[in-house]
Image 1 (cartoon, rainbow, N blue to C red):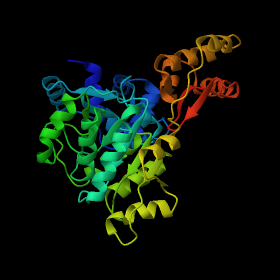
Image 2: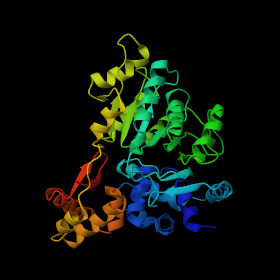
Image 3: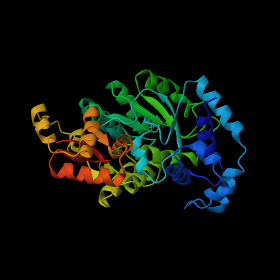
Image 4: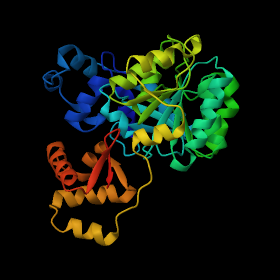
Length: 367
């Protein structure tokens, strides 16, 4: 049995240790196994942990649940993604409450260069259907990863439109991957996986789609995306929660306007009116706002000339960006092996020299 995975799973089960505390512990120890092997006296000295949480860690005995979860993962070929894994959605790492561990069934790149969350009401109108389908059709050439919550309504419209336009899509669910909720979307879930998308959750196999799980799920939808687009929603509901979460994470939020007399668009109109979302009417508006317009790449000769006077640290960062043409700040920090302060200084200098530029969501690419 994979001992480190056992410790990773167990870390999510310890009483009084949530996502925030788990991140503190991982930053201190580097891996989950070292947390359980540490002395209680050392644990309680860590800022944010203290005596009660240190005792919870040392007195934890619930490893049997973690063992059962490993068997489930192996049987159904689910990929566990821990905070420090390369395939973990790195945009989530910018969120203070990023999930300690995620369960993933699928093949889409969760660190795709462009990720958009599309959300809205469960009881959508024809207006919302048309907007969703035209929006995603307009994003086809951008190779965007479409994220939504697998719910009835706009969520399902977004997933289906993504499949129709051969775009990968991720369904973030509020339960374990031993089931699909709503059950009517079992076929949709299979299509998503079959066409190169996936299902993602932070809930273990024993977790049911309880009501309180959905707001927790929504933070993943908002946090792993560059932008959240609200198609149609009333003034209350899950979409408004997700939009507020996205704003709290300093993500871009967009909304389609609706009639002032239409309650189903009241939430979108509220977000726009209160400067919590940017008004859009078509895909081109989003592309322009996100800086995704296609630009000519500088010639290799020009790039070579620019690199002549770069420092070793700057060259390291350039090589990381060059591999995928862009890279998230967390990936740069992780792969470079440099301290965050050295990375920040090098990136700033590269921007001053007009070698790279910053995109929304703390992603860097060449000018």
